[in-house]
Image (cartoon, rainbow, N blue to C red; front, top):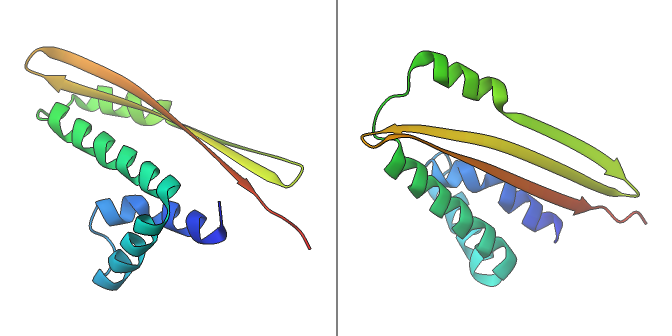
Length: 115
């Protein structure tokens, strides 16, 4: 993956949440059209956001939201020019059928070449 890919992947959530300008959206979509790996990542995030939106129709109790926030973790390790970031997110939704949970883990590896 290139530095451009890293920049696009860092901004995917901002795009999905409508937090970037029209020009930035156009830039990112142009990159996605030309880069199948980034497009795959984008599509996963779109699907995840849609799933959460579908499942989260009711407000979870305050205590549950606090436990979820406390369970969110991010760890970063670096070896031999490669930085690996693993983020684990717990998503819990109160629905008419009960409480549903999902755990999403994303690992991103960025290799920096010196020289």
